[in-house]
Image (cartoon, rainbow, N blue to C red; front, top):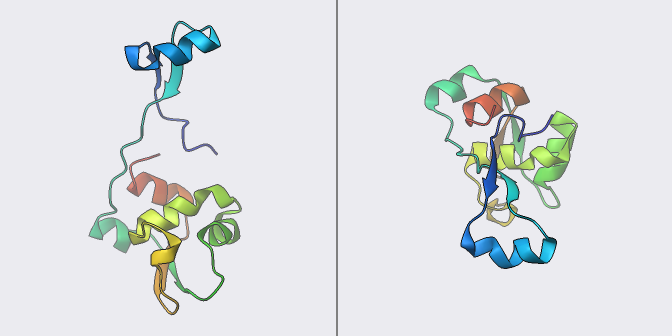
Length: 112
């Protein structure tokens, strides 16, 4: 499941990318639209079932994403859900919420 499946593909022919286009022999560069994520509302947090996890030494968001979703690439869902800019910002002993259903979490974040 790609997080880009609903994003529009843009054709970029701006002057900024002209040197890059010329070195690659392209007229335009195809790129994905930047997704605009939203913060989950209180209603979303109440409605969506989440597991609590006690953060400890050696924990990594990508490992939790793999454990819960079967795909380490969804580490950013756990980070965004908890408002964590980086793993280094999570102190040992912190309790973080991990949404159980990835589809519901993606919808609440405005991606799906």
